Length: 424
Image 1 (cartoon, rainbow, N blue to C red):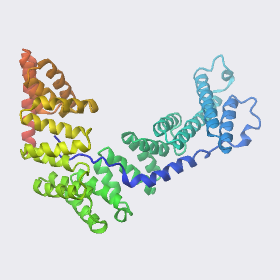
Image 2 (image 1 turned 30 degrees about the vertical axis):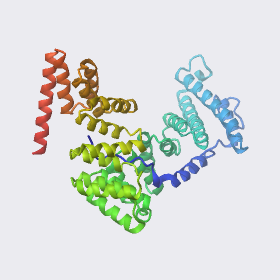
Image 3 (image 1 turned 90 degrees about the vertical axis):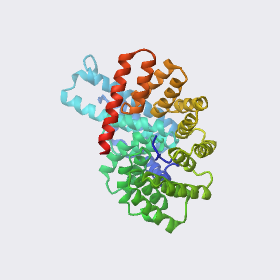
Image 4 (image 1 turned 180 degrees about the vertical axis):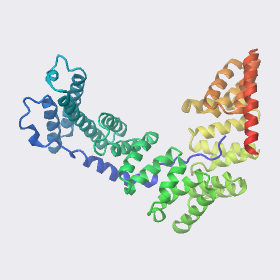
């Protein structure tokens, strides 16, 4: 069971900067609009209908009619996709008479206008704060024309605003590579790395931020990234400076406590976490971390009390549900643990440790077939976990499937041996 977990307080440093990011996206709407002169004589142009739809959409934008613009941009998409289909099979269409070079140039123009249509629809969705839909449209724009101006930036910001942080990092990284001096973009990428638990990458970006020490939220995020990437001493120095300059904070005390626990100093960790609760009784993760520390020390009644306190404040915290189930199981109260584990797995089906705990308890209570299903799923999610392999072997053994049981026990022995060698 991991001791250190990610604090889910949202991305504090990026909030005001995201408003700026959305404004920049909206400013892209009319960028690269079709010059009116290009429509002077389009009677023989295969892309005439496409260009008329683009011009109509951008006229609606200038008139302040976004709904009409959306309708015209959807017409752009329909016409653009139709033309691409004909370009793939021009025989029997008006495109059959074009030379290969003309078809190539037409495809380039169509892709540009398709990308513009998807992108501007994405910006309109951004204005309406429908960030997930905006991101999907920017994704389509990037697929049609990867070099379309600002498409990676737009996609990354939309994914970030939709809290799809795992999908935001790649386009944000590409956008930063194109604009390496964009400080706001660097911070946004750092926050996305932080949210996806790529702590080393987040620390590297934030460590070079010229505004970090003057901005308490950036300084906190930097300290958090250091603590999560096993640089506990550096994190402590950052947090000490943060407290000295900006006053004490329960959230800082939680991370300091977790950093101390990471180094094996449980007593210091408990002091910091207790102080955090004195400052802010409902601060996230203080009771959860205390509960795990007490569990590791064998102080089961105190662990149960702390974990129940966390769950009263955050009843959907799957890590605390799993930890409390472990406490109850160790106290011989397996039946009480089962609902907690099932709730955790409803929210997080690939939670290997909860699958393992559930399977182990079911096995102990004689529900062998059900236990086998859970332990098989746990082994798929965490194939290198020796304890899962051992319990899976026991389940096969109880069902009389001796060959499969022996296979799992052998994997268990190999994993244990590998772990012993790694420690020496």
